[in-house]
Amino acid sequence: MVASLSSRSSSHSSWRSARGIAALGAACALVLGACTSGGADTAGEPAEATQSEPEMMEIADGPHAPADRTLAERTVRASASGNETIVDIDLGNTTAGEYSAPKRGVIVLPKASDAPAPLVVISHLRAPNCADGSFAYPCASGVEEYRFDRGMTYLGEALAAQGYAVVIPDLGGVFIGADTTAPYDQNAMWKEVVGGLVDMVTDAGKARDVLGVTALPQVDASTVGMVAHSRSGMMVDSARELFGEEVLKSVFAYGPAYDTFELESISPASADVPYLAVVGELDSDVGPSANLWIGHYLPETREHPISVVQLPGLGHMFVNDAAAQAGTDDRIGCDVLACPDASEHQRVMLETAIDWLNATLRGEASSLPVRADQSLPATVAGLPARWLAHTPGTLASVDASEFVGASEGSAKVCVHADPMNPIQPENACPEPESGVVQSITEVNYLTDASATVEVAGARGMSVHVSPSGSHEPAASLTVELSLADGQRFTHTIPSSEAVLANRASADGNGIYHLGTIRIPLDEAVAAGVVTGVRVTSDGAPVELKGVDFWR
Image (cartoon, rainbow, N blue to C red; front, side, top):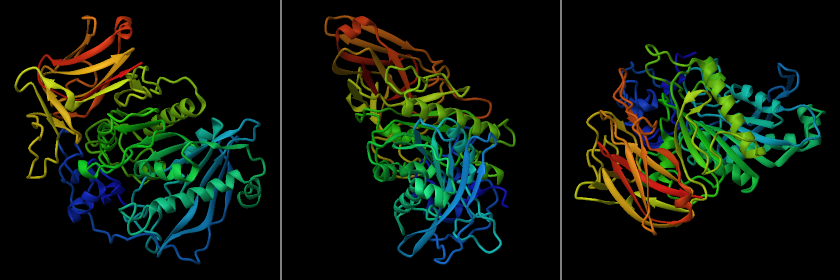
């Protein structure tokens, strides 16, 4: 067993993209975050590759499961509570051209009940699936294979206890290649593996004859939720294709990975399905990928919510128990910091995933933001939370480019390009003297700017903003609305607000991302017509992505 699988370049997709990282070669055999300007160490600056270079592994082009592979024996067991049935099943191979991977996984079923059991797919991360730190199927002779599907069984059991039917595909072989589309189609393989497992729980005959389960619950295959870790965030469209656009009703993601290296190649916008991502602030594998991705698409109109919440102390790997058991901590600095352990990661995963799926699949009450008029909770699973949240069903959205400075130099539309690129764009944002700003979308770098709007019936507004670095004191913001009848509404956002707070500390200079502040509006505003919005900083510039209005 190696000391750290994450040191073998998991190539999910960092905040500056998997493809860009792969091209860096041997220097990027370390933690992904250390190979980009986006991964950040505990000193608050981009991490540097300070570890000794590990032994380089031969990189497999894809999975090569033998056609005559001996199938693993099916196992059926009861959960610790005795109420859930856990089945480990091997259905053969899935093939794409010359590549072939096992079609297998874990199925967790609730006890038989007259109430229909919504279906949940738990889709795990991409990480080296062999104990020598390599991506390969099969692993080299004598080398242990990690089963990351089994590493999510704890979540499957908890969801089954809530009345969900759960399938957990083994994607260790499917995710061998660094790219999802070449030299083979991982999306097609994903659909075949997941589809084969789903078929087992939706067909009573197969459940009895193949799974060996007779007391099968009534599975509601018209209501599907998805839990996606890391690369599996890129499989949401595949899930919609497999189940149907109206059937996939919720996505919960942990540390999802997207192409966010360059704005020109950013991953497509998410499907309009309720979506929540939880990201650990110490994630040195994919970093703030979800924040960068969602931040760019904030101006798009959506019916359903999409948001990302960042939580302190958490990393990328420990929510998967197989990865945790293999000692795969991606975080930097935990030798000197009091970092949360695997049980804490899994506690957060359990609480947030169950809460979100219950809210979006069953309509249960939750403090997690399902509607635009919900406040963004200051804590999630007992941890301080920083939110970036799209405004579903927005009345109007004012993008960064629509704000005009009150005076020369008080506003500039700009973008943070890759700081490692010696050729910077003409509209590059000023880089902070202290701290790191991680953003790739166009923002307005301003101290005083306003925009013209025409919005009737607004009962609230969302401000999407980031500090421009570490400043002392941190800036507070004043947002002023002008109404058609001459009235004005003014709201001050204090510098103590989590999104604006100075994040410099004894351990680092501070890392900053776009965040969202939701502000309820007076009845007088809702009864009138908003004609203008002005945003003013009382100190250092801020970086504004936009302002939304909601009913």
